[in-house]
Every structure is written in structure tokens, then in C-alpha cells.
Length: 404
Image (cartoon, rainbow, N blue to C red; front, top):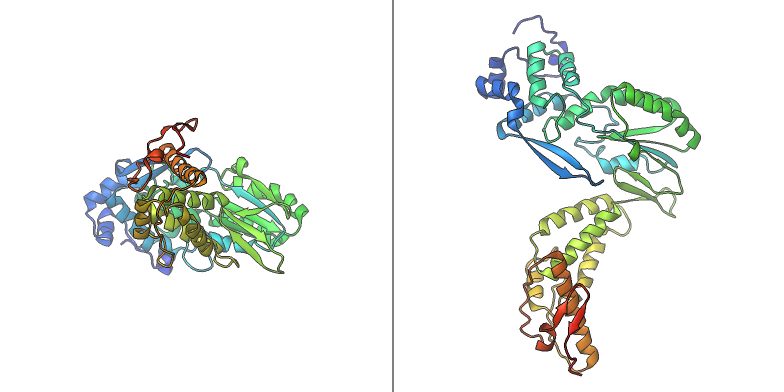
């Protein structure tokens, strides 16, 4: 390699050095032709999909091809992971001092909070910024261009690339340092979890006074604040930080973290659907959601895992007269230490008993039809007078004669 490259920073970080595509080929063990195609015709190596956002909109995800993903993983491991973001960048990092839960704890014991969201976070980071970053590390024009092309798509940072999370933290180092300096001077706590920024202190006036300065710094760094997601938290309302609710308790110096209420309602609904339908294809996804909520709330006095197990056990009474549902549940229990479901026989001797079983049958039938789920039950031990009802689910009208 020529000696005109400023190698001091590259050497101090132990970064790989290259000036030509052939030298990069030797480092990555991929062919020069492949690397050229990946870097010069990048758009051909992405598949774009759209996923739903929580606000009802759509988010575009760009999924790199297998070969491009390999190169991006190499860049991430050999270059980007060696550049440390500020200690207030809480996302996309390993270690017990980072993550959305640690981020929430950091602000747990303050009275007032300001939540800001950066609009179109990844796409707002342009290829020019990425090129400047690689150049500042000591890479020459060619190397910086190649690396930039491999990490960007259509002139911006794509969501879906292995490099984008780390690059966003590196690009935000200046932003973080400026905000950290402002906040330290004024006794305000600051942290950033990707595009979610949070500021907190015990002085409401101080927080409001610094709000214009905070927004000015953000705009100076070429980011846009999503005004719809700007929230000011006081002791009288819930403090939500990166989706986690910080709840004060009656115990001094003790707060509880709670996962989003809507997520817990969704989990209960998904569990109920599995139990009532006897179909457990979604089981692993549900267990993942349960694990997340339990991780957030595991320090609380009443752990979520025990509560969700109690909910499942209570629901077993609703399936015990359906042998197929009992078998399906016992074969697919969410947790091994849960009680097994037990089948019971149907005995109808009174009008009240008839009405009870009729209600269970109609409610389950209406639920399955609403969800468009195929019924796995055969009703071999059910009285014909119930299972052969002429039912109109939309108005719950029936055409039958009660045998009592």
C-alpha cells in the first residue's frame, strides 16, 4: 500500500487497509468481480418489502442478498464494531449497560421527561455522511467510496442492512456529544435509543427552557423531529421510554418497569385463540413475546411469567368438554410445569345444564367463524339437539326446540 494514506487512526483501531478492489478481495476472500458488482450495482442486490408500523403506516425494509449480507457482516465485524459510540447510545449494542430496559432505568427516578423521535431515522443518514465517516478513519477516496456503496442504497442508509444500526450510532456521535454537553451543563439526563431520544430531570422549568436548544442541535445535525411523537411527561402521567412504562411504587426508591399494555392484551388474545381453536402453529412466536415481556418486568414483585401461567391455567376450564382441544393443549403446552387439561363428560339433566352447554357451543362456534378458523372438534359426545342447531351467528338467532 502507498504511504500517502493517513494510517494513524486506521492502525490505532486495527482496521483493515486497502486501496484497490483486489486488496479488498484478498481481505474478504470474495472475488474482485463480485465485489465490483455488489458495490457498483447495489440496487440489484436488495429485495424491498413493506411491514406495518404501530401507527398504521408502512415501513420499507430492504433485505440484502446473501452475498451482499456476507460483505456487510465483514464490514461490521472488521471496521464498524471497533468504533465505539458514546455511552448514551443505548441501542444496537451488547452488554449489561445498554438496551431499552437499561435506557428506561436510567430515567426512572426523575420527575419530568421529554420524549423526542427522529423522523425517518435511517433514510435521513445520507451516503455523503457515510463517505465522510469512512474518509475520516483514513480510507482513501476509492476505499471510502467502495465501503459507502456497500453500506448504502439509493443514497441513504437502508433499513435491513447489517451495517445500518452500527453506522447510525457512529454518525450520531457528534449529535450525542453535543446533547450530552448541553445536558451535563444543565443537570439533565439524556439518552438515545436509535431514533428515540429522552431527556429528564427534576426541574420542569429547566427542561422546557432547554427544549429550543435541544431542537436546534438536532436540526443542526440534519435530523428532523417527528412532532407527532413529542411528549412531555410529568409525575401525574405515565412515563413511557422506548415503549416501556416506568411506574412509581409506594416503596421508596423502587420503581417498576412495565411492557406495553397492548402487547400483553395481544398475548392473552393469541393464547386464547390457541386454546379455543386447538391450533398452536403460532406457539413459538407467542413464547417469544412472553419472554420479552418477562424480561422487561422480571424485577417486579409479581413477575409476568407467573401471571401468564395463571391465566393459561384458568382458561383450561373452557376446553375440558372438548376432547380434541384437551389433546391439542396437552401436546402443545406453553410451559412444561403447567397443569395438564382434563376431559370431562357431558351430562345434561336440567334446563340450566342444557343452556350452559348450548352457550359454550354457540360462543365457540361464533368465535371460530369470526376468526375464519376451521373447527377440529368432532362433537362425538355432544347431544344432537345442540350441535344441529340452525344458527345465524350474525344475530345469534336459533331455530330449535329446547328438550326441557
